[in-house]
Length: 485
Image (tube, rainbow, N blue to C red):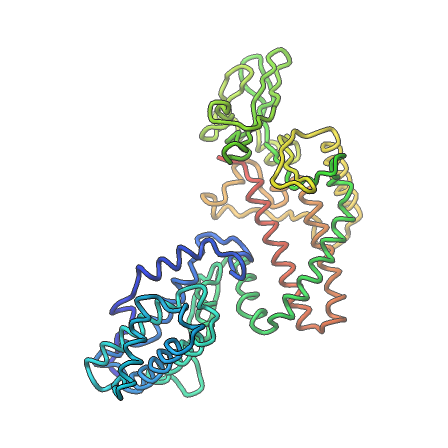
């Protein structure tokens, strides 16, 4: 068979597809981006459109198989009739496409069908397919049965007419799958997908999205929600003394920390918190920022919180391009010395300084910011002591806190080893490590419970989803713990 051009090699309604891709950034409910915020995630709209246009041949191409032309003409005529005659489907079609479907229906009412043997009609068929792709890229249409059935029938017709064995489906291979947008959309339009990636988190995400969710569907979601709530409840009990509520009933939702160095200015030696920015929230009249308050006599840098902050109130931070400026004496410690000091303390996570506590209050909207209190610091000490006790009692084959070395092969992207964080456990404070260890232990307990109630296969899927969430949390915390440079 002489190679026929695919639609993507001829034309593509890029402007319309791009509009759907831009809109998709603000969609959260039901979108796979909510499973994990992946780097450079490809929009599902663009992936869906590109896969369809890559799998379907151009009917106006001389080498296009006649079998695909016949199938496409029939499918587009059927689809046009459904959109034109079904009120609920009217809104799914853009203005550009509705004119296409209206024309096809009007012609059919006069006894004029799309003729897969007529060159003029083949050109109309090409643009009917492109209009279908443009509307199918719309997030709202991605689960509409008529679009799904038509796209899958076109994919199957293209596959078989191009030499694929009857009953088989085309295979879309993505060796750099990342967040899984391409293989997910391949499954949506009726192809099989093979996804791979060097990053184990990406592999875990794709396993959940491409295998477990299609296989178990709603039941998997219910079991993950059920056991996730159980883990949350048990973790809150175990960690209650390490994450206390405020006396006024407010709930801390975030603790902000800064690694520190000792100022190397002559005769100074003040502790300098490493802060790239002093802003805590920038929301107009509700903006909040930190204020540096140097105590020259005590050679100490204190912090205060500015409510309703504006740009004039907020001065420069202590870190600029990796070097650190002391506000007590004005000396700037160079980046080489900053790295040297942190390297001696394995990155400085466990002697970092708590700068702010973010809370929510019952019955009030928004977040509130306050300075840490002695009770907050006592909770950190209790967490450190609890982690030490657990580590001493732990007798498993692996260390309680990950002690594997961080590879130096990607030092340009994972640069934490130059600050002394040479092992994965160095990325976290003692309390972060305790929380992650607690979650992992509870997930282990879920294993036996789910296997007894759900069977081994579904139990494995539930545990994988819970572990995926735990690993994603660990990855996110690690990124938050890395020193700004």
